[in-house]
Length: 420
Image (cartoon, rainbow, N blue to C red; front, side, top):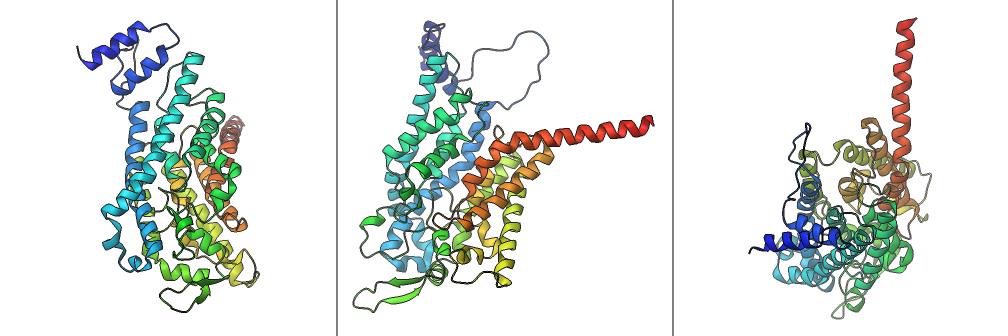
């Protein structure tokens, strides 16, 4: 008897019991459901929830693999800065991949293990089917956290995010907040020193006594302190070097590095290049809205340009704590931090985002606009995309409401003109 037959027998055995949802979920995950529709006319299509989730995961896999290599690369580059002189030759190595395997894979395993366990428990208690919605959330969570995030901390956050961000609203398709971002928000507010510090972005940075003084921070961290003095410890008897964070960041990372992702940051958020490839996959398969993605980038660019003009007009001086990120060229805001990842994989969530076409333009624009605003005015933790998306998740229904009401009003006015 085949494994499929054994699972089907178990499914039939527990049919009608409290454990039925658990066995149904395992059977449905591995095989197509045996149930078919009966009677009436039905629209036949190749897409379903499982296929949709799988395509999103496929789009995320390049970011995951790149993040594993980057975890090792940032570790060794922090120890030996000379590795940054030839990035391509020193990036795709087995040593780098091994660091990624021992640090990133546990994050993925814990995310899926804890999250699915909570979903199964709720399915058994409430007697509803386990849906495939967490397949994407489970992959997103490890990609939006620092590489050295403690596993116990991630477990607590996942439990909170799945219960509060999803299950209390009724499960997949009923939540008003993105579950992955709810988990990220919980980590930020519950453990701020871990999420805003400079140690967890690079593996084992806390034990690197000879490491580059700023190699543990993200690009946003550098730019937030751009005008501050930085003393780099000399090695082999060399004198200490005094420079600024901004100059040191530009010395370490080129525009090419920032775009390709050879910089410190959350596991899957650094490579704008691979994120755009993922965006192309999602847009081509019509899973993500290109309107939301494009408008988010436009909103971020507009806010960046506004801040650049403020700096150009000498309204703000170099002594201001906001100067560093305000003076960052607008297009660089699009390639650093989590903006690109959030715009492509988070803001386009069809459950929590706007549904109307005009609403998608407004929704995406405000996400990008507010993201850069938070990034600049919160230098203690210069990233705002996850907060901006969560905020707009709350207002998405309101945006759609007024768009629909506006269309109704226009049609009523046209009717009145014709009847007159």
